[in-house]
Every structure is written in C-alpha cells, then in structure tokens.
Picture 1 (cartoon, rainbow, N blue to C red):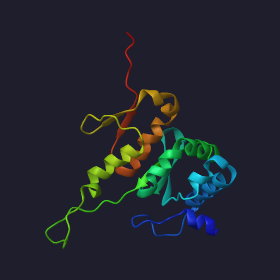
Picture 2: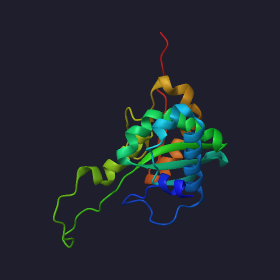
Picture 3: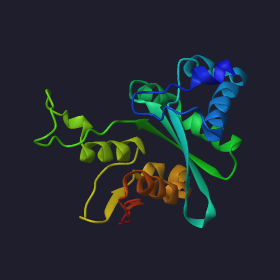
Picture 4: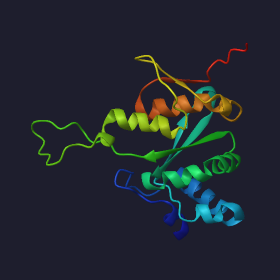
Length: 188
C-alpha cells in the first residue's frame, strides 16, 4: 500500500482527501506496468499522478481522466501512447486521457488584497486552452459558442474511436461544448 501512496502526489490544487477507488486502481496499474514491462520501467519509476476521475461518455461508455503534475507532463508525453494503450487494456471499455493538474486563480477585485499580478497561465481562458492542448489535438479553433478542433489527419486511425471521449471530458472539465474532427482531405 505504501507504493500506491508514492504514486499519488497531491499537488496544491489536487484534492486533499484520501485516494478513492479509481485513483488507487490507476496507481496500482502504473505500478504493475512498471514491474511487468521492462521497457517502461525506467520511464515509469519517477512518474506520479495527482488525481483520477471517471467521466461518462456518450453511448454509455466511460473515460478515465488521469491528472498529472505539470512538471511531469513532458515525461508522461514520452510514454503516453504506450501507457494509454496498456491502461485501456487493463481498464476494458474505458478510454484513458492524461491532463495536467492546473490551477485557476480568481480575477482580482477591489476588495481582494493581492500583492502580485495574476499570471496569465492561471487565467480561466488559458487553463481551458491548455486542457485542449493536453488532449494533444489542437491545431485550430473557430466559432464562438461551439469550438471545432481539427485533429491531425495522420492520427485518424488511432484517435477515431475516442472523439466522443475527448468532447465529453472537455465538457465535464470546462463546461464548454467542443467537437473534434479530422480535416476533410480533398482528393484531386
């Protein structure tokens, strides 16, 4: 049990509660992958998660959103493809998405005694944009209420079945509707 506690790192904006069942299952799966897959052992040993949440997706499916500390996001990106595939095998009929645990600071008001200016990276708009980037999909956005995100066409085969999961996860985290599409290739 101590090793599961070492895999879950509660950052400043992660929940302070004890890990729930989903978080312990994801942490145990990471430990199992670390012990059983020798190619991933060196990459997975220093990695930790800060939280995990289950989100409902259209069609009665579910997705697991794994929140990782921002400094470790780059290390997760190196093994994300293989790690996602292995975790989706372990958690059957659920999609796995990795997103950085970011903090939003409220807008300063006249009554708030703020000594420093709020960093741009802590604004609501920037955090929502970073979540889109964490889904590894942003190429361009258009529209005002409904965002359309065009994915890279070379990833069409590996991401086609996850489009509903991406939009449901983004809607759950931000409250904004977004559609994920692949650009139409004209054959001439």
